[in-house]
Every structure is written in structure tokens, then in C-alpha cells.
Image (tube, rainbow over all chains, first blue to last red; front, side, top):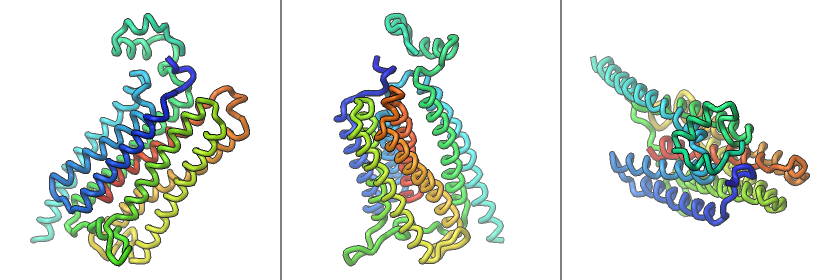
Length: 105
Length: 225
């Protein structure tokens, strides 16, 4: 293992990921350019976003080659944020409906 | 730090985790600076998620229509309005800077000082380009009447979310440009040769890639949504 001397990988892999990120960014731009709407738009945006984020973390930040202990320590805590996102989505929905009701009457 | 490779390979990955956390030694087999940078980035992840979540919350709960980002951020070029073009260019600039940074880290570990410095300076220059384009975007929007409390296109919360999220990200990019130049200068002067390790270049790289990573989420949720 080359852990002690740091992360050494062929330059080629960075260039490929770089190209891939360019292509994925172009795709997400095209989602807007062609005015896709509704669930198709949102799911495409999220798919391209997660792919880009995954490649940046895994390859550019070398997470793919780190030991599992570090992967767990860094990648599991952000999952708590899904609870925050879920709560705030419910809260936002509720506020929207109460505002609607209050402004109508 | 050193693992008994043969004994380690015999363990399942989960047994390795248990060993790493419970044994009387370092939990993470990386330089401490790198572990600390990761933990700082973890805390930054929470900050940016709070911003994006609160933005989504106000966007969902407002009864006034949300401004259409595709039109707000359009630029008039070649005789027509091109939607989001500046944001798209900024995205490509930041991705390119991540690519040059990844290669700088690689050349650092190969002890190729000249290429490391050149690639880090290129990364910093691309970062500065990004911040300049952001300054242009802010100026344009402010001239058109965007304020944190009102704007001519729709829901007033748009301005506060926009200035806070892109402002905080721009601050990270600006700090990153300074950080990269400081580390590049140390590489040039042979500081890391004396220390015998180029891990500081990789740690600076982690910060820089994180700035790019946050932009991926801002691009998706603020500009494209």
C-alpha cells in the first residue's frame, strides 16, 4: 500500500473524470436549456448532481482509496441532514397551506 | 500507521473498522492534518446544507411566485438572451480548476516541484476568474434592483437566499485562492522538501475540491431547480 507516501494514481484517471464532469455539467445545463419541467426535470438534475458529487469525492478527493474507517466517519454523519431536509419540507408545505388559508379569508 | 498487511487482509472490512476504532492507536491511517481537514469539511457540509435547506423551505412556503432563475441569470449575447450562460461558464471554470488541482497533488507526490507550482497557480487563477465572474453577476443583479429584501421578479426571499448562499460560497473560493497561493509559494521555496512530505498539497486540494463540490449542489438547487 502506498498510504504512507500519500495518494499516487495515474494522471490519466483525473483527466477522464475531468472530461466526465464536463459532460455531466453540459447535460444538467441542457435540462434547463430545453425547458424540461416537473419530475423529469427534478430527477435529472438530482441524478447529474449526485454523479458529479460522487466522482469529485471518490476520485478527486481520493475517498475511494481511503480506509473504510475514514469513509464511515466522513460520509455517514451527513445522512443526519436527510432528517433536517425531510422536516423542513413538511414544515414548508404546512406554512404554504396556512398562508394560503389565511390570505384567502 | 503501518498495518500488518497480511493479517489485515484476512479481516473483513467491518472487522477492520472495529480494529481501527478500538485499538490503542490512531483511528485514521492518514496524516492528522488530512483527517482534520476532512472533519472541517464535514462541518462545512452541515453549514451549506442548512443554507440550502432554509432556502428550499422559504421557496416552498412563499405564496408569491419564485423568480425564474433561467431568465434572471440570462445574459444578452450575440443578439439573443442565452439562459444561465454565465453560471454555466462559472461551473466549467470551477471544474477545470478542480482538474488542475488534482494534477498538482499528483505532481507534488512525485516531487515534481515546477509542475506542482504551475498547476496550483493555474488553479488559483481559475478560482480568481470564478470570483470575478461572480462579482460581475452580483453587480448586474444589484443594478437591476435585486436586494436581500426585495427584487423586481417575484418572491422577496429570492434576494436573501441568493446573496447569502453565493456570497458564502464566494468567500470560500476567495479564501481558497489565498490558501493555494500560500501553499504554492511554500512548494516553490522547498518548504515541503525539508519537511519530507507533500501531504499539505493534498490537504489544500481537499479544501479546493470541496468548494467545487458545494458549487455542484448550488448549481443544481439554486440555479437549475
